[in-house]
Image (cartoon, rainbow, N blue to C red; front, side):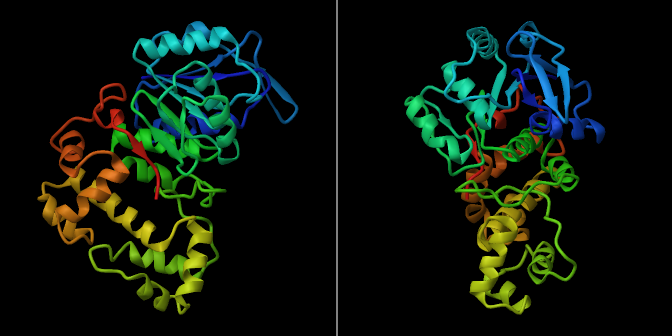
Length: 335
């Protein structure tokens, strides 16, 4: 797999951790063998900066040829037109079959290239209104962390780029690998504005004995049972109102939303690792039936449980990034 990250002059070095940090971690854990990452200058003589350092970008736009995935992590000024050569290169890469992703202000580069016309897309919540005004053909939704529209993907600011990376790892390597990688990452759990944290991310660093964190850990061992939020609040010796408030402070999501997503994650793991009927898996995950599981699974993953098993089940082979049917189904990390 060939991953290209396009940067512009003066981009902070820290941006690269959001652009391909998740993929680097996957390689370190023995996943994605053969991954090739190239950092490409979106304009001549581009340099990465940070900490008083300046680092020339090693590759030019010609390196985009043959890319499987092209990521544009940011753009220096959303009101400035990106250089035409980089727009032409992105159009050409997309036309050849590469998937193209924009993170935060980098979404404006994709929009300027016309790759987001008549498509759903997101960006940092503070820039969403400007994106809609500047590019009225884009269907902007600032309430989600990322949008996977098949061959074009977009994400909000900062850690949402890592969320999108985890999503891509999940589609390539399965939920178990993505979840294991997530546990090794440190990501702020709360998102500003409407971009709350609805997909699985590492637990925040909380003080020992935090009652809400304890109930979250306990809940993960009880997903096959009915778990009213009132029960969790009682276990934490808190009123329901205070429990809900503290839970949102920790995760950015309501307790019920978080629980549903953890149940879907468990269903993913069982679909991958076992041959259990979907009805039985649903009951193991706290749903009354496969019919009750299906709408939540489809909303979060973009496909039905049976289709997910066909792609990622233990009897099948892991699909590549370019060929996975899941990567070409719209998937939105929303609550």
